[in-house]
Length: 393
Image: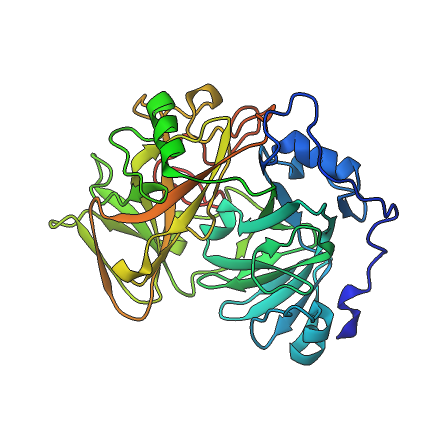
């Protein structure tokens, strides 16, 4: 299996530029917006055979594309500080799968896919990855891996090399192909500080949530179990053995063939069954201003063994009125959709219980296009919403 890295040379131009303040840039440290990522592409700090496509670049992230092969592997792994992904594949890969014409990735299996993109990062610029929203909402677990990596989903500052994606469908088998986009990468320049005092000032200025803000190590997000005022719908639970999902075809699938509806309980609570997958929504409508991006981090595991939000990136403009983020009731903000899974034992969630926190990070400067504004974004002004693959009522 040593042919995993048999690709074109990484970078025809070996010159690597250190980040400097550019015209119009507000801060020397922070998350790079779209035009900062475009600069990295021009400077060969991001490279792909055939080039990086314009629509891969989001307001504050880069969509990553699967390459033309996948490897079924025995188990997840990290290469370690002295190891390469190719070496690990030689020891742990079962077989090689051609993705050029499409292939099915089965539930309960672990796959490793070399990505089309490679990076040549400056010494003060690091990358960090998450599944795309549509990936998380169909319960596909992904993690980015690099050579010499000791952590998942992180690309060390100064890293030069290929990128690989671990893919593990949990509830539904998926059909993928070369070029499918399951994950995204953000770039952080320097080490921006995060503190609650700044977050409180931001909330006072623009209103990060529709109501009182719970700020303690980030902005608290709680669960909505009252549901739709007309139907009482509070969420969905994935059906096992439901069928195949083609990740590249939106609006094709019938909801009820894949999802069981969950309605409001008399006690305004829900019991999470172990290893079942739920789509729920936050009680708060949240706003991400044009100056910031945010990431959902799991709540303290000491309060419960469950996980929320595999796809934790929130782009600048999410829920913002100027980017079309006004909710269906006319209020500002958009609710966070939560991908929830309980571990080991059944667990009771109650309405209004805090289950995660949003950590806001400043951008180096404001992106020219916000989430939702002119991008045909799938989840702007959302309520409880399934992934783009399903027909909308």
